[in-house]
Image (tube, rainbow, N blue to C red):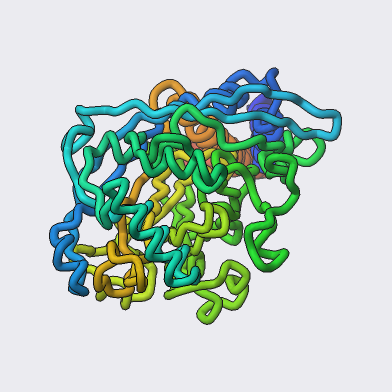
Length: 497
């Protein structure tokens, strides 16, 4: 009996210790996790996993290209509505590698990122030998560009097109349209008007993409401030662009589009600079979810991304504009009347759909999104979908344009996609899902166990203490028969008498 209070007190002390330990872990564990995140997200060669992930991007990336094959080219020349059918996808594996990596004393690092593409027949619907018909940018694009020239000059230009056998539409293989085909017109222009076109002798929609770099990026390492990690300090030595009409539109905002700073919230946005779009873009939070067991936030393009200046005043600097949903990139594309939009004119003015037959936008197939792990800023699943369009119309003097109605003509749309898988996903899941979950269960387990121990030991201690107090007060213990021993003695004497 004497040892029970001491045992109860020991368990009581252990219970209090467990509660204190659990409470401490509740506050300390998140701090420790955040410290590890900061330590491992700084761009530093010592961070083997994250540095390798940033440098070589081991996650498989793919570019899926869809062509809008024109079904009625002759009718379009007569002013009828274009009818197109989607062909593809033609899928290319994208290899990304950073080179010329140079760290600077001010907490930044510069690099050139090279990209190359390899056709994946097993993932494609069709082959690069497939033949499709799209607008001829060299003719229809040039016609709009040169519309303001004197009529006699336009007639001379039209004669030049005829001399080089260039018509309003191109019927070529997918491979030729993607990576270039021999063009005598391009060769002529390169010789007599150098600088007018980016290539010499060949013309292709993605010629400048393959085996090329995206420019010299200088980004922050996060060494001095983790909130700035991956953010662009300059691009090709520029702190701002000169393509657009306002300082706000010319700003180079956000990251280089591969990784973001850690500790994102639902109020955060994902800004990034895209050399291909010639501007910074920004995604907004849509919802939370999971990707193969890893928690994520999904960020999507807002409807205002490509809105015109009338519908969204801050975009006035990107004009001259047409309908909302189109970005005029002629200022950074040799003045060619090229417009970028989301695939199938998703999130664009519905009137654009009425000008072309064969489009059917929906968010699942054509929406742009990035699923990102909010704690680390690492994308888990990405689908960037953009469409290339050519503004075409009838131009007096250039007979190749016929009686074409004024229309923004979709040519192709492409999706750059990738997701974390394999060993990287396993490491992510273990360190950022399983380990924090185990710590969470442990901390609350300690608290619950401690409270149970405190309650039980308190009850035991109280019960033993109560019984001991009865003995100390002189109270005679009761026998199993229900009467005290003192009562039994007189009763026995009476029976003897």
